[in-house]
Image 1: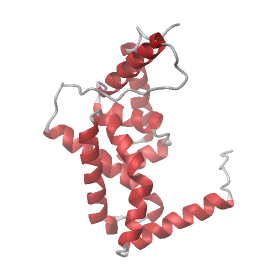
Image 2 (image 1 turned 180 degrees about the vertical axis):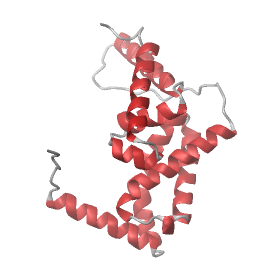
Image 3 (image 1 turned 45 degrees about the vertical axis):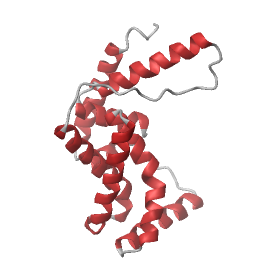
Image 4 (image 1 turned 180 degrees about the horizontal axis):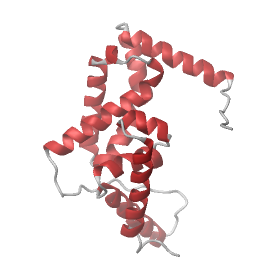
Length: 193
């Protein structure tokens, strides 16, 4: 038996509020679209950055995502699917960008400074591991990278990933499995068994 989680009153009202904001945006309410931009700009930027690995390019592609979304907002038939629709636009823009100018050069990535690390040795090891993980993700096959990023970094369900990518759930599960195996191989020097 499939268990469906019940939404709290707050989640239901938030969901209804967001549906209203999307509908108002479709009717030309620019302030409503600004609200959508504020709500989704960070997740979209993060998603794109995880795919391209370069901050300035990610910012440019995120901006293009919202421009394209604004221009095509009336093509969105189911307002409850706005998030998936927007991530789908971002995915397509990234694919277009990668096809236009694919390079094998890696840009220095921002290091994550965790407060729990106190000693310089631990900080160096953590930075090295973060760098290795980011580079390994960037080296994944494009489809695998998209699925891995959506599932692991953005906690999207298989159904949401299918909506975003247009791929079958079977392909998504296979790609995720292959991405994990590939990353495990690439990062084997960092994994202690």
